[in-house]
Length: 309
Image (cartoon, rainbow, N blue to C red):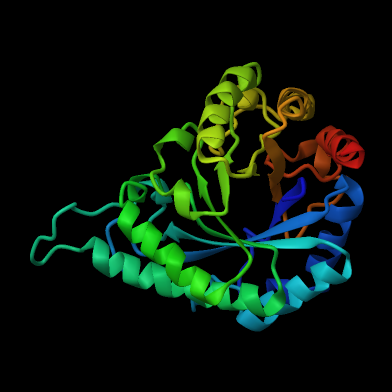
């Protein structure tokens, strides 16, 4: 696997957003201003709660198949590799890591078998699109911590996906969970979310490296990033953290991450979080406190690192 100089794109999109010229211009600017060579197009189905079993991937919260295919094709005209990442959120705001059911089936209660049936249909739908459009990788789940113990169901899902899609298949586990996923043996690429505090990357990379070497598989951080707020570099996964706008702290997070991870040969890239489909203006950048880097000092840090790889 070649080193992935990637950015996540599209997470904030709804039906029709990929048809807007501003969206394509945003993707072009992402490549130009960050020296990215890979776009991870992340889309999110919805289920009602963490304990309901139907995954809705056909509503207005999703870009249409046609506009997704058009955006993938456009990314390829820019020379980008494309990774497709269909995941799921809960309508009530519960984080997907808490999707969970009883280990033993109980009458009148929701069941793992029903959830995996629906989720597998969802993944196979987008696996077919990934195959049609020549995506370089498919990520079949993200940070679904409570589901990960269901290794047999995940193995079956990945087998079904591979019947449809013949590129690389990965699963994106959450931070600190790299050693807890029992089905790494059936993915082609191990990936995780790199939201580790500034100053702690060395110890976390030591831990992750042991897992990666045990499975002898390629590894990359399918997510990594930090909001531009004071204090966020110590809790970069907390999108709800309240702090003053701090563009320099965000830039320092990226400097520390790249400096330490760049010394580790087993780290084969990043899918940084994230680049908005519809951008704020450059004038607004100095007041923007989210994960986006457009017009911020972190953008130059990323460009310089990717440009040298």
